[in-house]
Image 1 (cartoon, rainbow, N blue to C red):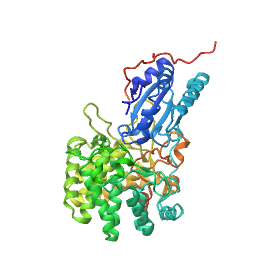
Image 2 (cartoon, one colour):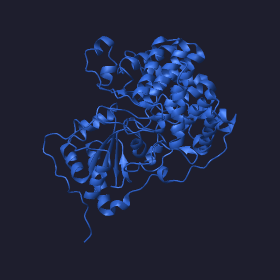
Image 3 (cartoon, helix red, strand yellow):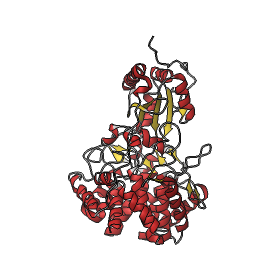
Image 4 (cartoon, rainbow, N blue to C red):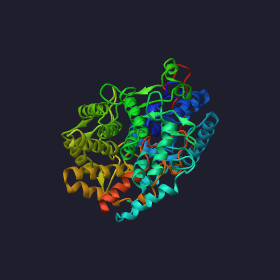
Length: 526
C-alpha cells in the first residue's frame, strides 16, 4: 500500500513506539487495506505530496498497518472507516484521528496535532472507553431481546430503497438471515437490492457496499468476508423460498471464490477496486482487455472458515458438487496450514515472510462454526471444532465474555477488548457445537457470554458494520463513511443474537530527497 508515497513507513511493533519515545514525538498510524479504494487514493495523492511527506517524516513516527493482517490493531484504532489516520502517544494512547484526508486536510491536521503535542505532550493522550471501562452490566436472557431486535427490522428499514439505514447501504447478511425468519418480505427485498446493486454480473461475487441510500455509488471492493457471508445469506433465501433468483447469485459467488480468489489451497483475501466502474461495468469481452484489479491472495483463517461455511450451506441445500469439493479443500488447507488440531490453536495467516497472530476470537469462532457445519454436511469435523472451542474458552473467555485475542503487544494491544460481534459469533458457534455433541459446557459458556451484553444486545439491531464496533472514539458510533468501515463482511448482530437468545431462553520511501529524522522533539518550556 505504500509504493506510491514518500513517507518512511515503519511496521507496527515495539520498535516504532520505542523510536517515538526516544524522539519524544507522536506516532502517525495509517490503517489501510489492499481492497480499500480510498486508501490507494490517499497514497497516490496525499502521502505522495512532498511537503506532506516531509512533515510526516520529520514530526511523527509513521506506521502503516494492513487491517486484514492486524485485526486487533484495526479494532482498537479504527476511526469509523478506512483509511484511518490516527495519532498516538509513544505509549499507544489516542490523541486524535480522522478518516480520508486530502492534501489540505492533512496539512491542517498535522499542524493541529503538532501544536497539541507542543502544548500538552503525552498528557493529551487518552484510552478509549471500550478499553478502559468496567465489565458490561450482565442481565437475564429473555425472549424480550429477540422481540426488540425483530422490531428494529421494521423501525430501521428503508421502505423506499430496501435495506436498513438511510445513508450508505451495506448487505448486512446476518441481519438478512434473521429477517428471513421474522420479516421475510423485507429480507427478500433487501437481497433483491443487493443482487441488483452489488453483484458483479461478469465475475460473480459481491461488492462491499454502496455509498448512497439507493444502492448507487458502489464501492468496487470484493473482500472474502463480504462475499462469504452474503453468499450464505442468498443460499438461505433459496432454502426458504425455492426461488432460483436467490440461488443464481450464490452459485456465481461460489465460482468467484473458487476461481478468481482461489490460491490452490484456499481463498485469497480480496480483489481491489482497480479502475473502478470503468472496469466492473464493462462487459466480459471488454473487461478482459483492461488492467485487472490487484488481488490479495493471503489465506486468512477466519475468512476461509466463513467461506467454507457458506459453500457447505450451498452444497447442503443444492447438492452442488463444486461447492462441496471446494469447501472440503478449504477445510483441508486450514487444518494443514493454520489449525493445530491437537491443541486447537488457530493462526491468522502465514505469508512468505510473516506469520499472523494466533488465538484471535473471530478466527476461532468462524473455525468452530465451519467445522460444526462440516460435521453435518461432510460427516467429519467435530474433533477440530471441539479442540478450537476448548482453547478459545480457556484462553479468551475472561470474566464472563470473550476478549478479542492475546492480552499482549505494543500500543493498546495489552488492554482487554470484548467485541460484541465476536462474542455473538462465538456464542452461536458454541450453541451449535453443544447441539452436535450434547456437551452442556458449551451451552453454559454461550449463555454466560450472552448474558454479559444485555444493553448492547438490545441496541445492536440493524446497525451498519463498524458503527459502535471500534473503541477508538465517538466517530466510531456514527454511521460508516463511504471510504469504508471496520468489520468488512461482519454485519449487525440480530440474526445470531436472536438465535442465541431464543435457544437459551428456551508506500515505501522513494529515492527522492528524504527529510532528516530525529527532529520532532517538542519544545520544552524554558
